[in-house]
Image 1 (spheres, rainbow, N blue to C red):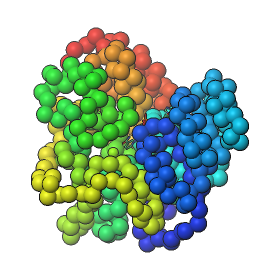
Image 2: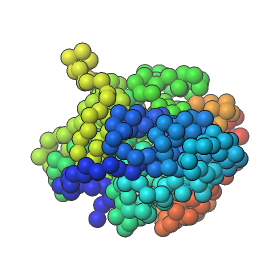
Image 3: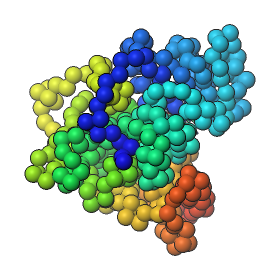
Image 4: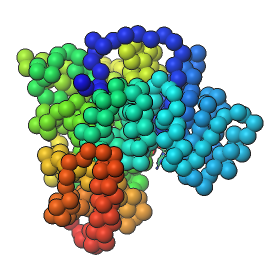
Length: 407
Ligand code: NAD
Ligand code: MG
């Protein structure tokens, strides 16, 4: 049984629902809280979490009268306690508190921690067999098939919150698995879509953070500029919907209006469109199996005028090709791809490597990992986390030589 539900599983619910948001202070967290704010009578907030932003977390916890608030940095417990003093809101700090937040009884949980750090908390929610809106693609890429198998076993319902995957989820209902020939996820192309390779190589942090269409957290914005984000999303689509790499295409679409398409055997292609606003896919997940009112701008195609499409350029954006390689290699290679990318992005932010070196570090780490004979099927979260740990170590070791090497 798949953990991503089928449309014909539809069964409407009207009761007040318990909601938890992991990564409440981030960009996806912000969009989610915005939707909850619009209909306070429908939702009761159970848990909210943040990494280090105590003030932001406490503000949200008070506004929504959350039952529990947790901050990942254990040293911030005292600060969080005093910020919540007199409110009756329980709180905790450290990794175990984030896991407790995921374990507490909620009918719907948004998994929006950034990076592989979101894996353990997401699995804690999976094991409760609850409904999870999954924004945190890195945890899926890190844990591979294992994550979805565990979700299916626990009876958890995984709703794709990433805009492209949410689009596929909506379009997939038009046919069955045997009738599907391929899916297409779109990519804006990011700020360097038209740049020459030599200019991309030298791009600065400020340039990488200027996304043309979407307002997002720092890490995913850099991933969009390198198209590593699309690579992560190809892998995410493969695991979410049990698709082979050959069944997943990427199409560059600078306007970010068509988010994803599904092609069926009769050559019908079903697409989902909308303004580039994450509150739309999140609203779809929050309303599921019904539809709720979304706050995004109404799509005005006449005003937009033209929707254009182009093939991705794997030479200027090698990170995208590496994602297909990792997927074909299997056995933890996607975990390595993600871990190396997280190290590379952190190094780029710290100005230790050039922008062009991000993909080079990922490639070198993948090669070293395969050469070392380290690949093996992942059968537990610990397996995935061990590969993640080793890959980070290899990437950190390779970093100085990659930093020195020009393209
Ligand atoms: P963000 O950086 O804005 O927010 C991340 C959230 O996670 C924050 O609340 C932060 O406090 C928390 N966090 C970070 N590190 C943590 C750690 N080690 N332990 C516990 N909590 C931690 O990121 P975002 O843009 O909201 O993205 C969140 C996830 O959603 C990412 O996986 C991203 O790829 C995915 N996503 C984001 C968007 C978007 O539009 N922002 C779209 C699709 C998918
Ligand atoms: Mg996306």
